[in-house]
Length: 419
Image 1 (cartoon, rainbow, N blue to C red):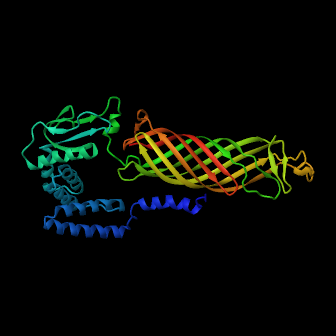
Image 2: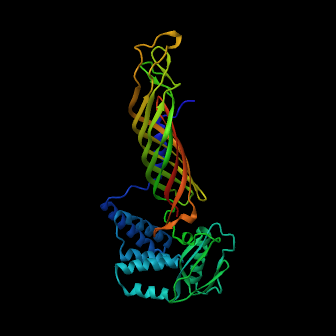
Image 3: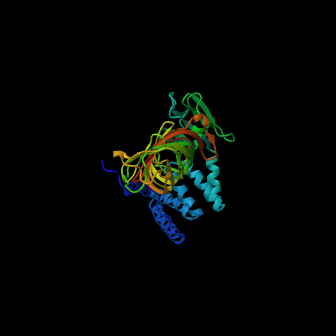
């Protein structure tokens, strides 16, 4: 079977990364111009009571903040008006708070006080493994349309995402088999439905691109250097394979694709095999004239630096990964090829006993990796914006140049964002 070309090995992960990369950042002048354009369109839509369009323009404005645009009082106020017309009271409140931070106006202050007089913040969350009832309902449904809309928005969020953090009208509610009260002036209720022993902090944590962020992987490895397949007829050529222990470490990142369990992995790292003594007894070596027995000791070592990328997929607490990449570095193969007897056919060893032969230089090789990492929930810890989990992983892979294959395995400790 024809081997996959090196170009293809790199084109695949590069295409995946480029295809999923965010839009290119705008220059300050371009971002400012786009902000002005969006505000004018938003204002025109508001005069026609096209509030869905106003909401879309406001969302596009918020996206410009990453390009250095600072939204104004008027931007946030119009965004709050759109959210009110769409029945999203939590968004109304948050946008009014942003408007107040820009400028203190009586209109906004009174609006905020009106909301705080009728609504309180809550945090409701349910674990996907929870088997009990998960419905949320008020003890008595209010008559006010905006309050009914707020309850409906909470119910929809819980149904779609399993989590709601926002405003509910004051009153008594049930969430699954739990009852809670939303009372003015009291701390916000926080109700988490989860199996016994589950990490409730993880369930309650706000989503932050749950499997996106920096990752570190380090651990001992085992590398084998395959027998020569080059068939060189120039000088002594070691044919015996050898293997040894070493270390492999990588630093990179993971990018979750939307809310799916799939993502992308990209890493740079070091792959080494410690200098290993190789005995030549019973091994063979090829020369221009044939094969000869060899003896003595030689050493082999490997020091590579690599880049790799590929897809990942989460199945429960397991992360499955595949990657292709490119390695470059130094390799040293000292072969004990002293000729002690006669060559095949009875011919004498040319030149008597030859010295051990060292093949060393720069290794440039494509390769691939398959891996699985398990992240125990009990080991996760909170870092403020989510949770990080240390996991134990097994990785298998191989580098391959024109002369040899270099299969390897690693038992790795991986620190990765888990929520």
